[in-house]
Length: 241
Image (cartoon, rainbow, N blue to C red; front, side, top):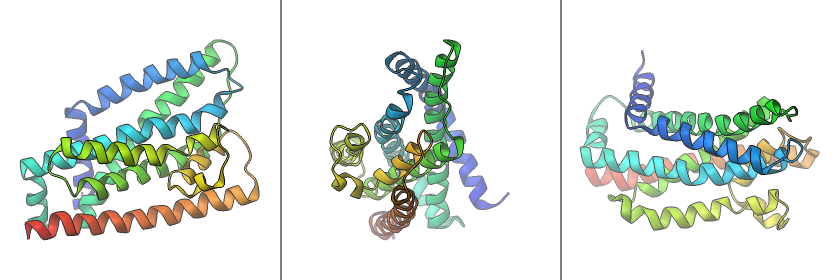
């Protein structure tokens, strides 16, 4: 087993031991019931992409902050710095483990609601490839943003207000996808393109929407990856060095 795979497996075990999976699944089931009760099978596709954007936004960044600040307090990050594990491997392990958790929560919420509709006699089944791709990318976007921001803080209480402000700003594209404010400026926000990828699971995208959703998602992930790595180097590695 490589260093990276060991780090990913360790992060997943820690998240499971700390109850993140238990809490996440329970919350996801509650969301599934709420989605099924508040939507019809025909309208589920209009609700899900923006709903997942709103759900993942708060929980994923909070998970990132909790894990990294806990590891700062416990000296785990300091130990990782002097271990054979590289900075990129440490960040990739966090990214993979947290995105897997966010993806599991999202799929339980969505397919749970669909299963309830199906039990009632009718259901709308999304294109699984587009849906999973969108969920993965939006999880990556929030995780990398969380890493870049939380690297500056040593206490979770100091991080909460900046996290809330950034999370709300990144969730604003829900206005576009729910048709409340179809202003193109909302598509500039980094979460808009992956939300449109999820939207493609329920309806065919126009050509410009496909190019935008895929191209802007790739550009956003690359930019946020560089930002997260630079922030970790500046605010953690250099301070400890």
